[in-house]
Image (cartoon, rainbow, N blue to C red):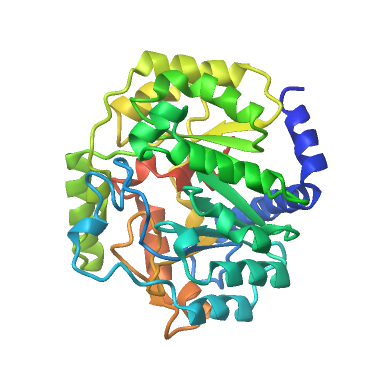
Length: 383
């Protein structure tokens, strides 16, 4: 009953989005079967079921753990211009080409709400009837109330990392109250959007996981994701950089944005995760760590994959960078397999460069992939 009750609540509150997610599960199951049957063969790939648009690199916060702008963020150390936004022509090309029924978008950045065409993008989602999850820090949500009100297709994954004092110590003074005020504003709309919270588990907030979940449930959010802070070791970084140079002739550097150590209290982390897992909640609370016992391996064995080794995401989702280029994965955009400014979606998705990467990833995982949330979000064994 603990699992059924939140689903019933979800279906009643957001019936259209619930139907979308139910159909999405069926579509993903069919795609997993296709991948197992055909994998990295030369057979025509089915269209992507998800498109992730990185609308920009810019952000109005400087969170210390961010792989882009944080303490070791890679964006700060490269010479390219990161003030640019995804050309609207690329966005329009994706919509004009047409995607499978029930296909969806992930809108990210940087801070995607800083994208100058964000309101227009909300309108296109409604016109084409595609749902989208916007990954945001939530500071600019109120600016788009008019575009969100009455539009069933935008949903939001809002980052908060603990109660007010802890969150603001990580994200900046006053951030918590401003974000909560914007959440309240969205919840006051005639048809409030689906609102989820992403809690990045850090040493500073690990002891407050359960109490933070309680607070968010009281505030009426729809879903909570407990996302363990992602880190890699110097050994993993070196192995990845050699791999990319050897296989693709690429000088990799984006892995440096994850090169850090987290001094977690492992016992506390596991105890908090177990307390959340064993408790009955009125909403769904999820984590990439499907079992509390995974905590120790996640921290002590950074290169150990805690689930399926194969990155199924490569046959499910198309990623687009702010300049229109397409990487196999936006987490490490050192290598790209196409450019939507000058190529069609089909030319990139079915192209030789994309096929080659899929074949490589089928044979072996990159050393930095063990922590990647795509392994847990898109695997058949997803909990």
